[in-house]
Length: 230
Image (cartoon, rainbow, N blue to C red; front, top):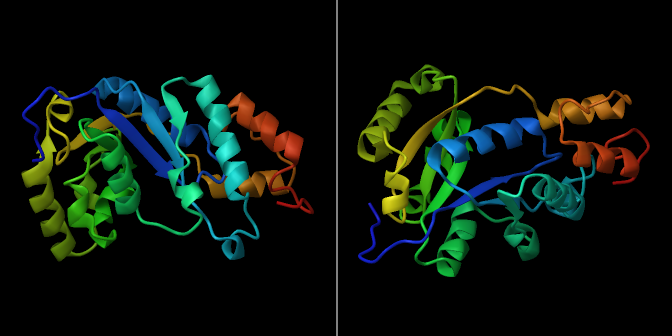
């Protein structure tokens, strides 16, 4: 585990995604996990999407604007445009490396879902990630992760990873710069951005699925509606 001899700063959370659009299914499990782990500041980091790939989705700047609206409503979040500012596709290891250089004495806690944990072995330079951050997994109602893993080989790899890295007490995330996995038992919210986009394309209301400020932005700019220019 990556440890430090001197007193560490308060941990910083990182939560990244396409956020196309950002919705309550992103926000509330992360807030719940942050409370469980006593993490009081989280960087919301929208991914960059090349212009030739986002013909049917909101632009990088529109997605960043929606993230900023969320941060106004929930002060635990702040907008982190690192990925968008690079103006090119990048990997999580790039973002985390930049944040580690910026915050050398701060434990970094990367918030992910169980689907991301299961597929972590496919991430670019995944082994390096544990030298840069902890992982806080928003696990839905204590579901069994192993039930979702495909092959026996993947199950073995995940089992070995958790044996090496998992901690039961979130205080461990505050005592080392990186290297741990913590399973935060959060409430499920089955909401997807693709469903929201589809609903908006047929002029259905999504006010119960997104924060009020995001809903207002979506309506004002007619994002994802048929015939709109994104």
